[in-house]
Image (cartoon, rainbow, N blue to C red; front, top):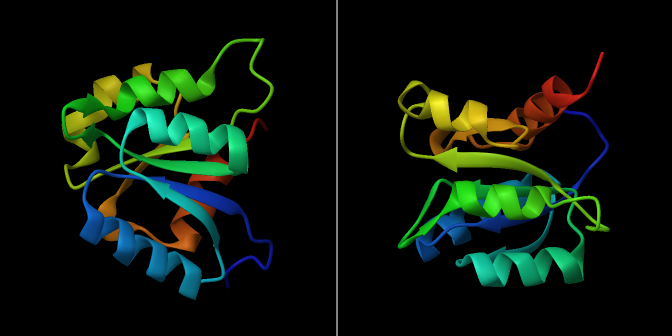
Length: 129
């Protein structure tokens, strides 16, 4: 059973069709999608303005790199707000395992597995015991 606690989510992807489909899917599962962005600059601005609990970040943002965005969102001690970052991609996790492990992201989801339950699972795994 899906947890009743919802979260505020920002989706970052350079594919407008995926953004629309992911937004609609997550909203249908009672996730509060507070915004969508297609560039690093847009995402950084929106995180500051909207303060989502989690940012779903595509690994490949056209000419930009989702890993760079994950590092920026993790920020330093001067950053007031840092959402959990979950990297997403159509590529298999095993193909990206090394760079995912080196990133500050809470975890990874294949785009085909995207759901509110899957996000909850990744976020729970990232919590210290």
